[in-house]
Image 1 (cartoon, one colour):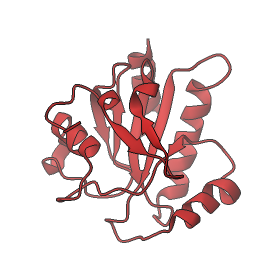
Image 2 (cartoon, helix red, strand yellow; image 1 turned 60 degrees about the vertical axis):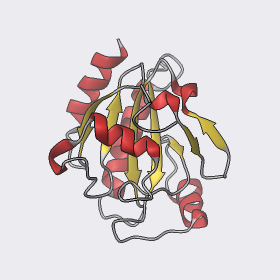
Image 3 (tube, rainbow, N blue to C red; image 1 turned 120 degrees about the vertical axis):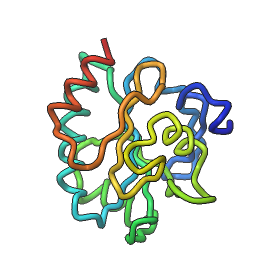
Length: 167
C-alpha cells in the first residue's frame, strides 16, 4: 500500500526482526505507539523503560489496549546488526517493550511507506521530517495517527492519551 492511498497503519505490512511479514491489521482495536530507535542512542534506556511501563500497564492479563511497534533505524548515526538488536532484547533488556521489526529508513527516498503515511498525517515541527531516534507516533484504535512526540515526552502525557484513545 502506498502512503497516499492508506487510511490507517493497518493498511500496511512490515517485516519483523526475524524476516517475517507482519500484516499490521493484527493490531486493529488497540492504540499503537510506533517508534524508530537505536540501541546505541543515549536515550535508549530511558525511553525503553518508559515504554515498558506503559506496555505493562495497558497490555496485560486484564487489558489489551496498547501495542508498541519498534523499528530500528540507522539514519541518525548508529548502525547495529540484527544480531546486536536481538541480543539486546534477549539478554540485556529483560522487560517487554513491544514488537521489534526489521531496520528501516524513516526519511529520504528509501523511507518506508508506513513512515511516509505517518509523517503525512502528523508532520510535526520539522515539516514531515524525522529528526532523531525515538520519534513516536500514537495511533487511535482505528490505526489513524493522532499524536507525534519526541523522546522527551512526559510519560504521564502518553499515559493520559493512551487512556483517552483506548476507551
